[in-house]
Image 1 (tube, helix red, strand yellow):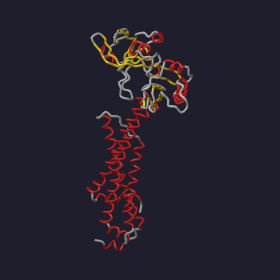
Image 2 (cartoon, rainbow, N blue to C red):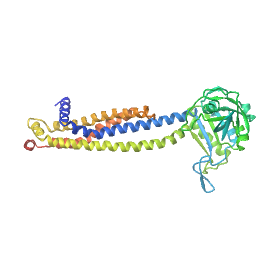
Image 3 (cartoon, rainbow, N blue to C red):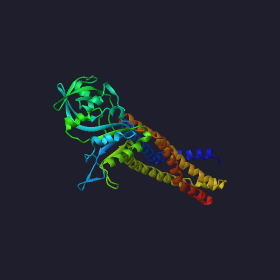
Length: 407
């Protein structure tokens, strides 16, 4: 018997009890669609995180004081708990051949006042390399100069959100003045809009000023909060990070085996840290959805066993007129696979629909990877073969004479 004929008989047999077949398919339809929707949501979230992290800058390496494994006075000191990054550290790192850009960092949250408007925001102390490191152009005006950094000039560049709140949307506040604490700063320009960072913070809601100005006039500190570095190429990021770590271990006189009092973080580290929670949740939800596929497979076995019982006389008649056990086995096995693939296809379509709903209506990132569809189809077929084999073998093993006597 040809495979085409076997498929025709399978569809005809399944059509005799449409409601029962539909209810049996429901479990796998839900399972397949849930798996695709969950994987799409996880993939979209991961892609968004990677894009946001990479938008922070080109070939970015961040050095921060403290260490997640560090111990201070018997207590574990997390990132930022140590104030050991100095201007001398930055000078030593700037001399490394693999370092293309470097920006010292200091920050302070302050109230910024312009006329009768005020806005609480983060004042980021940086140097002239920041726009190049973060691939961040200006919308209006210009960035401060090296001379401004050396002289600790009271100048600043506003983030777009700060400019909107102080001077109105789309205004150009270049050469205007703002007051921060008891100091008057001249506005040199406005940064282009960049949106949220990988951590969810609004990157446009900050003010950039020379780090020397922030240290001397706003915080009174002598230590840096961070050092941001741009490697010469993406291929050299890992190598540059290793050299930076070795250099700081030398300048900080850290002996082999001792815990570093700083952390060197690359883009890959940020992506790994921020996607770990997403991947864990996606795996958990996908596992729950896979249970629906298992339940669907059990439903296939159930309906095929019932079908074998209902069609015992038909099986006996076919075998009496010459059908082999292999033919009967293939007939019921194909029926099981047809059920699986048919409802797998419906589940894939429903999964795509859910993903589009999440993307368009809920405005949440969702991407359906091709391998998820192939996995769903393959799993559906495998479930059909696995759970359909026993009923098919049971049908093929019936004795023709006993089958003809069955009522």
